Structures are given as structure tokens and as C-alpha cells.
Amino acid sequence: MEPWTPRLEPDGSPKYVMIAEALASDIRAGRLRPGDRLPPQRLLAKELGVDLTTVTRAFNEVRRQGLIEANTGRGSFVKAPATPSQAPQPMTSYPLIDLSMNMPPQPAEARLSERIQGGIQAVLTSPQGLSYLSYQDSAGAAPDRVAGAQWLKRRIGEVPVGRVLVVGGAQCALFAIMATLLQPQDALCAPALTYPGLRAAAERQNLRLVAVALDDEGLIPATFEEAGQRDKPRALYCVPTINNPTSATMPLARREEIARIARKHGVLIIEDDA
Image (cartoon, rainbow, N blue to C red):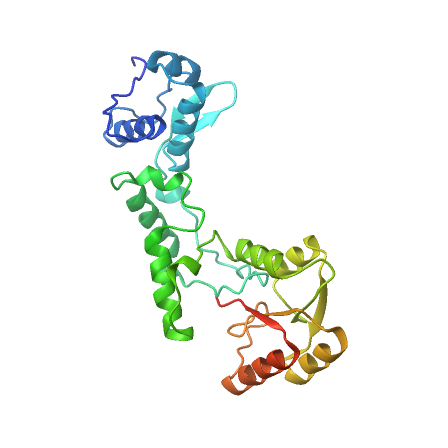
């Protein structure tokens, strides 16, 4: 085949986005077929008059969509679509149960893998879809922050949108909250069995973890009271609903007692709500 050259239609998008969209479009339209070799990135960059990094970034975007693959020393090729035989098969023996995450097993009927793939595909093929893979506002997209404020309003009252931040995962949020509110060597109460990510973040920030005993209804208030008197903790980390990893959920009366003790000793509560 003749060397592939993208047909770029300027629409205000970054050049790497236009290159990626042109490549993905030609693959889906059949103008590029499985096994076709793409031109070397350096050669394509020279032909288009752009930096090599621009072409590399475009190829990486399309590779993330599963449309091309790179082979060291050989170059980049159009990838054959996955066949049913290549798709992950359900396990016929005992399944692997990962207790490090409080995620319930997914029934096969949910078709979760298929639905996630379809959802991502719909986002990426929408107008300007590839822009979602670029850097976003570090505080979160405005519609997401508004949605967060509305969600919180039903629980804690009116919250200014400017005080709502959207982060890329609970681990990022925990680290930022702890770095903002706590100082090295501060005592941080946490369930005796707790989220491994919390332990890692506390160790990184040189905090003193104080274990609070658990039963089948979550944190035991009496143990928290003792810790408040003995260790003078600055904060309490807890997962009151479906605690990770025990799955215990605290009833309302116990939550109220934990909150009362926290107020008594001036302890901040960092609630991780899955």
C-alpha cells in the first residue's frame, strides 16, 4: 500500500488530536486494514511539518483505543479487532476474590466489561472526544463540580461550587486532605482493619496511625473515646458504609456517637464514602 498520510481538516483542535482522529477514522472506514504498517513517526512529522512529539502523542492516543500496536524495531501497525475467542472467558473454576478492594463481584449478566468498552468508545468517537484524554481543569470540570455541590446539598446543606474539587481518585483526595489538615507526627485514628491506600498515604506524610477497634457494626465508640483521651488525635479516617475491607456498615446511632466523641475532643472526621 502507499504510505499513509492523514487528511487533516483544521477545526481548532490541537494538531495531535486532528492526526489521531484522522488515523482512527481511516482505520474504522477500512482505508487502513489490519496488518498495514504505518509510516515512521519521524518521517510523518517531517511530511506534516510538525514536531515528532506531536505525531508520537497522536499515535499513543489511537493505541489507547486499541486500533494500532507498536513493535519495537518494526514500527506501528493497524491492529486486528478482537475476536470472540480472544475475549476474556469467564472462569469455570473458583474465581479470584480480591479482598484489597471493597468492590462486590460482578455477575456475568451485568456485561460490565462490554458496557465499559462501549461507554469509552462512545466518548472517544464523539465530537472532540479525544480532548478528554488531554489535561483537564485541575479542580474538575465545571459541570462535575456543580453536580457534586448538588449531591452534597442533600446531605450537609448549601455548598459553594468553588469549594467543591473533583480529583482523579480517592487516593489523590486522601493525600491532599491529609497534607492540608495534618502535620508530621500528628495522630490519625483509623479502623484497625483499613484501606491500604490510607496506610500508605499516612506513612508518606509521617503521621502516627492510631488503631480503633471494630466489630460487625464498624468502629467501636468506646475505643475511639480512649484514643481521644490518650493520643490526642487530630483526625479520624473512616468508611462508615461498607468499610474497606470488612464491609461493616455503621448504624445511625453509632455514627452519631462517633460524631459526638469527635466534637468533644476536637477531632476532624475524614469520611471515605464509597
